[in-house]
Amino acid sequence: TKSYRTTPLGTLFGYSLLSGLILSIQVFGGHPQILFYSLLTLLLYAIMLLTYSLIQKNYSMIKWIFFSTFILVICGVGLSAIQWIPTLELSSRTFRVQNTYENYGTVYSMPPSKLLSFILPHLFGDAKGHYWGEANFSEMTGYMGIVPLFLIILSIVYFKSTLKNNTTFRKSFTFYFYIFLWVTTIVSLFLAFGKYNFLYPVVYHILLPLQYFRCPSRFLFLIYSTTTQSQD
Image (cartoon, rainbow, N blue to C red; front, side):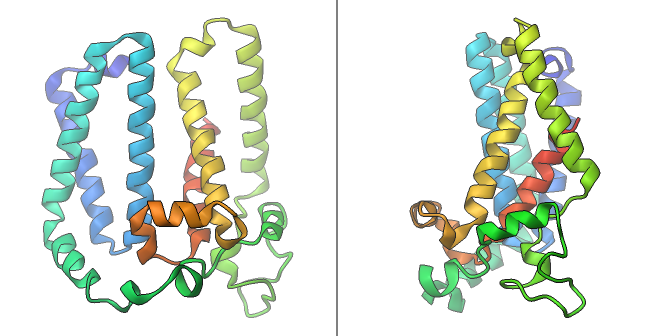
């Protein structure tokens, strides 16, 4: 938050342009599903920043948040227009518009038993052709390593300890950032279950872009990102 108050306008504008460039590169990557997950996370992060600013009554920060987001989106959308405009037109002609929730939207849903793969990646086989679990090895295995799991536990302990011993911690940006990371992680894991999640049909019909995608287990991508940040 200090960066919004102390960073010169030109530098903030430069950071926004750089972020827009990174967004356009992701568009050119040609994987709309992961792009959608990234935009969804960006939206949640912006909501977190706005919530923090309103609670702190830092109204000048709200102005810079909108400014940065506007520049980021305009830059990212403009630079990648040559990619996403034809893709948008093609999406109305693809066979995926005829697919339904049952025969497409929940394909490669992660069963709850695959939670064990965060600790034992080869419990259901490996990627060398000896896999006997559901779907395939790469889409269903959430293993990140033992050290990252240890650091995640350590970050939780640190968070609880700081919350208990530091009375001003609840008012800090770090507190809200931690909440954002863990809410995003829990929601992503919840959605990765797909058809094994009783609320997924509701989310599927509310977030319309999901109707073009299969493989809910790819929400694991967000878990890898948010848990890595939480270890800092």
